[in-house]
Length: 226
Image (cartoon, rainbow, N blue to C red; front, side, top):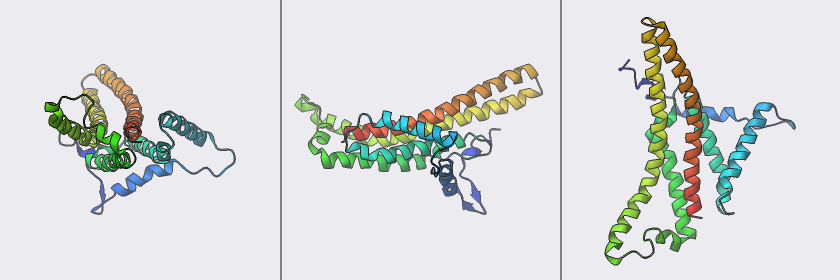
């Protein structure tokens, strides 16, 4: 079991070719474009959730920040659907890869920072030096604020990777323990199986919450720079 503990995090290949791109594109099929005047219940629920999330997330933004609404909604839908699909048996979760999460976090963070320096140059530079700072502490505070600024995209990516990876590892370990206990004690195996079901339900919630948290933090970075 220990040898295969991280097997589900290895990027899958087919005939020696990586198929991660196809897996990343697959969640877009779950959100079809409505073509009817009256939608079915699934599409209606999807649209209601998207509108609710968009209204809550865009409420703090001005007109310039609201131009990012389509990108932010696409981001939360992509991460949420990818996380949920990764909970299916024998599936692969791209958001467990730190490289992919950095690939999402760094461009979005850079865009918000560049937007701030372009439209609010003085305010953006003022973040590096709080008002009323004593003169001897100015160089140290500038260095600390610079480091904290560049840590933001790394924290975004590591938070998403750690939460999704930890949930998958727990499910794997408890599932293995349930199979091992099945031949030893049926009652204990039933208890661990119940815990496994509850943990799986929790992971569905974590998958959606982490998608929302990732997008919300990007939205807050955008709000600070617009």
